[in-house]
Length: 603
Image (tube, rainbow, N blue to C red; front, side, top):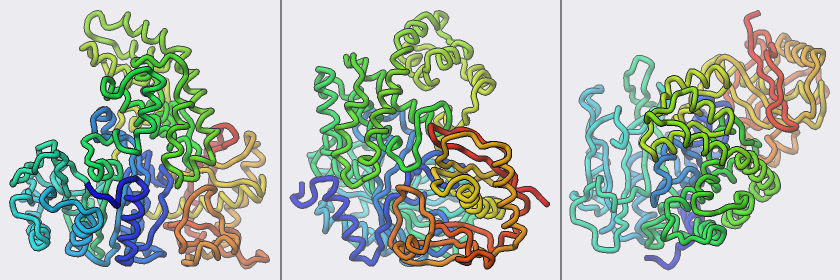
């Protein structure tokens, strides 16, 4: 137990201040919705917004960075309900972009844990990479272990995990996609039990809780499957706020910390039940509603739907509602419960700015689900007499009663009934335009594509952003974007469908700029100067004090440019590289939000 660091804000302040003293620059938390990365629906780690810089692009703030990043991970959603798993969480991280490496990273971790947080060394243990003879004979990380020993950690508290790069939880990170930076890591564990820790470390003992991970990106996996030593070796670390705070307060249950207790107490009041008797149900409700509040409150305006991030949001809200009913909450509760979440996070202004939208969307979604929930449960109970629910029956529950397939699976598991998922997926594919990533819950982190095709489309997005203001309205602002090597997708505020004439004007405006062979210039300037110079920023997004600005120059214009945006890139150097711009679809994305899909074609 320590006296200094007790609360969430204590921990965050202590971490950021410590790394500032170590010459790291603090960067703000990015949106939960990754920009221009089609490989993942949500920001899953602190490194996600830093991908271009881990790949070698220069960061405006230098080579040492730190942050607290809001994250969503749903691959462990079935684990939520125990003491330590969460869908939404905050990740403390520090990075070295080609600066310090293994020795300094481990020393920083050890110093922060033992000197700042005052955690006793005799309750710490670590794992290190055990090597992989099958893959280029990748060596055991003896160097990492020796650094830990020199700092005072006994050999018995260091475990080399074998299994290699193809198996999870074996001290090898990445690459996040098929190719890219990767390398060994060392994970730090804390003995959560009040009784003394055993002399030897057994990583399979659940009383050892992982609280920090230091990743050493020293290799790059190529398309050929080779692991090549990187010229720029990076350090990427991550420490979960929720788990660490529980440790600091001597708690074995994260949900008993000050981050969750206001939510839990409100659930107790609404249900008339005690947390001690309904732990799993209350943890799921608290976790899922907290995640839903952050998704709804994000600057990129996500609503419940049957597509992408909106589908995940709908699934979280409806799962929380179902568990609320199971513990006796009969009235609508999600909107009311959200009010207990906001005061816990005073530093995320977007939640407070969007509090009305959050409450309205939760109420609307709960009303929709309530209208069909009882009928759907009744229908479910009529199925599975032969211990099997057909794919068509499962799809009927989705289409007619709004049951996400994961919820039907959960209900079926409770009754020992199987579902024909192959048939369900076939039905689903024929009737819904829902990505398999969402429906299967496979949210794997990935590195943003950095191909020439993506660079071209990224630059074309800047042209489209300005064209919309020139052709439609000066008040138009970007509300989100997504880029693959095949197409761009751009969301913007506008109250109505575009006419065919307007679409043609947009295409002509952009193609004129492409044919004019305009130079694309990048510069790093203070945020205040960027905004005062006319650079566009995404509404509500947070930026560091020094930013990258991309300008598309046009000497025909009085101000000398046609587009200026705060952006991390990457971009082409001249618009002549783009080809022919063609809008392939214009549609509604949400109320008051339109979406354009476009591609670049060979001339």
